[in-house]
Image (cartoon, rainbow, N blue to C red; front, side):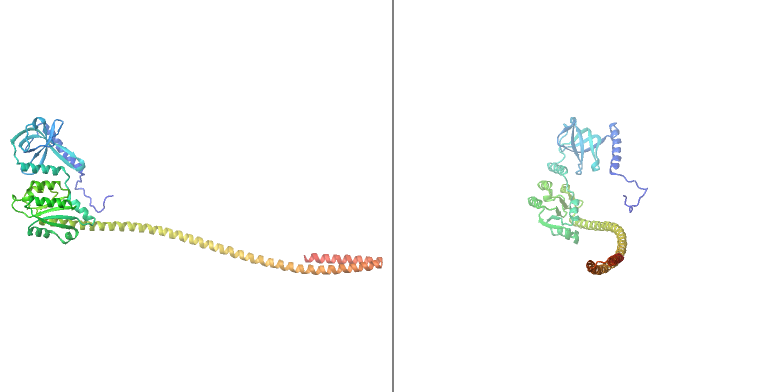
Length: 423
């Protein structure tokens, strides 16, 4: 999603890296075809520096070095012309510019296809210059260290970079360096200083090798300006060779801005004077602190935003759960009321049933008593009947027998009637 804080404009045209490369590629294409038609032949002069000496499809890939600087152009020389050229000779060449586009790295490499070559001066450079150029090619072929990225990444992790500082044996050199350092740089970076004479190559080489073995994040050479022809150890080929072979990134803060010491071409970072080196560390620390502060604030805002979103979501869920709890509570209350009502009715029914049961039990008790009484009366009557029967047997009289029979029947009917009425 696009950042809403970025103002959109129709006045500007925004290009992707590949679009810019294609624009230059199209221009180079046009120039290349024009040169093929004889309309754009390029004439150049420089020092011939042989490449690796391997031929590819009838061509050698060598270098043409600028006579006044350390700039190189790749040249593609056919075998028929290559045999006429001597290493480190000043030559004039004519040819057609080709190019090689590397989209992944947004770079265009120019190559001159040589069609004409002539030698102007054999051995136009000294043997020392040849050796220096070889060291420069060796350094260019190896991976140069990105000192800025290395130190910034350590500072961003809130760790202390450890910098080895080789300082010339003059008080003003260290004073100038210290003037460029602010309090933040002194706190955030650990500087391990070593004084050394820059006039003695063997001593400087020994110090460089020792410090390279100690695992510093970078090593800085610090020396003031002076006679450009009197660079001492800094112009020594063995010292230069040592610097090219070192694993630790090298920072140069030697000389004045207008002094062209060759060592500046071989190091990984160049600061013109000792004061600039101190300022470089100070500015880097200030910038990292500022970026960390901004990143921290952005992180806090992001976390705060995420927390607020989670809190809003939690509140919604809490409201939903509260409503569900209320509904469940009401259902529980209604169920409890129904249960209480049913229990009340059940208790009332039980009470009524208990009363009815008590009445039945009382009736049974009374009936039992009456039945017992009636049983006594029946037993008494039966006993009397037996007595009368005995008397009748002893005194036979048919009239009495009739009366007795009627009386017995009446008694039996009465007892039967009373018993059934009670039940």
